[in-house]
Image 1 (tube, helix red, strand yellow):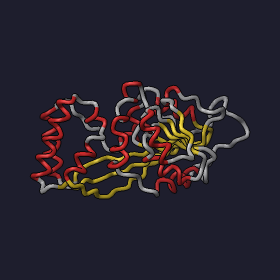
Image 2 (image 1 turned 90 degrees about the horizontal axis):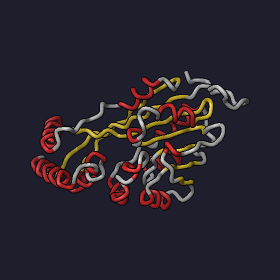
Image 3 (image 1 turned 135 degrees about the horizontal axis):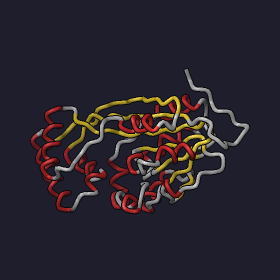
Image 4 (image 1 turned 90 degrees about the vertical axis):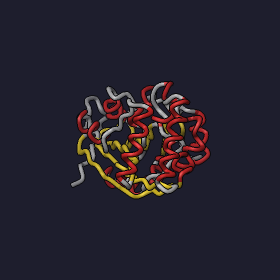
Length: 265
């Protein structure tokens, strides 16, 4: 995972569980990236690759792939699953892009860990003229509105500071910062039925859970377990996967001889 040192340490202890229970991404994302880019890119860099859930999709793009993953436990699992990618142990803010930039800069479920004041500018500076930014991630919701309301009430009772980001918030973040041209959004959705223990294991891998105190974690798991029992021992999640694409325009001082790609109609 990327970000400061306090963030780097969040997920490593759950690396195996993370890989086991976190849902993957639609393979169509790779096709969307290639089509938007105007062909197969010459290089792809992934920010905060973790155990390689996003890497599974990005490997399908067919370009040399570099993954930034500073947590050694996550990186070890990533290397086992994807032995042909190059892994750098840098956080994004410390990584030095190659001269001329990269063709595609991707980020799966890690954009929120980057410095909000600089992430768009840094991403733009890391890309070659005409390069593609690709951010994608899941949003977990509940298929049954009553279940959603019960879960939110239980968690709010344990920690009233709990807040949920708006759906597709990173699309708005990219648009608002104005660093990229031709910003587009694609949304995929499907239902994810989970038995009680599988659901609780998934919760154990969430950042908001891992950053709470052990006492709050235990109270949260107990409350959610009771609720799932009341739901009949299982829960169905609505999994909304959003892909945001943006194009880097020509920058001052950019390397000459490489025209920016024309926006797709």
